[in-house]
Image (cartoon, rainbow, N blue to C red; front, side):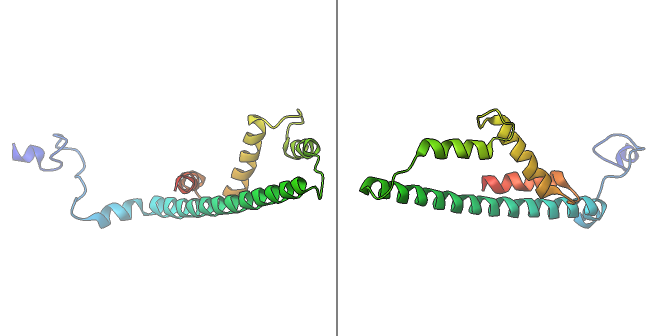
Amino acid sequence: MAGLFSSNPNSGDPYAPPSPNNNDPSSILSQYRPLIQQFSLSSLLGYCSAVSAKRIGKTLAFIGGLAFVSLQALVHQGYISVDWKKIEQNVKEAVDTDDDGEFTEKDVQRYWERVKVFLTENIPDASGFGVGFMLGLKS
């Protein structure tokens, strides 16, 4: 009976290939090295890109908020008059990608596709990049 389980004790099949030596991680790493290298590099690049995008987004949001508060302070003091309806209309026209007059989910999807194409161009493993990017956004 000992000969029956000598090749792979977990399978019960005497003709199964031997299981890798659990004490020797170098054999596992050498077998999957190309996959690990691509996934690791792409994931790291995706993570770093997301962290940078978050920081840039927060900075732009801060600057936009500061500009709004400053304008409102000037409006409140009577120094200037701002036509917010016209500004809203101009912003909608600038960000509306399908020319339907509204900024909708469809527009967001189009912008997201543009960002993905830009960030994953010539990357060896775009899926690893995407995983890293999502992890970076959550951090």
